[in-house]
Length: 66
Image (cartoon, rainbow, N blue to C red; front, side):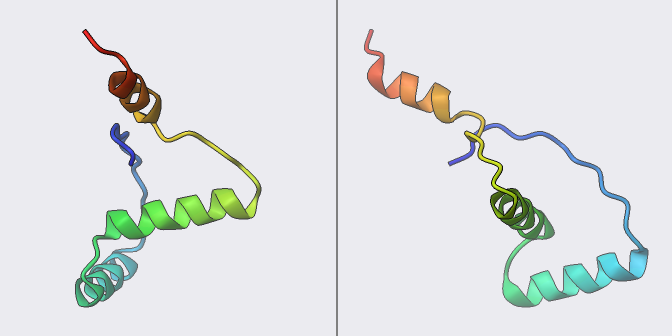
């Protein structure tokens, strides 16, 4: 699971934003969830791999014992 986040500002037509928000409300998802899914799918479609931020930190924390 991704633990760290960064902000991405996207400018879109207000009518598209309203339509997206309405659809998301009906589907019980947030616009941010939809955008994150679209980005993951686009990266995968183009063969781009990545390790989500925070995953390395989480793994290190699980193995590190005081």
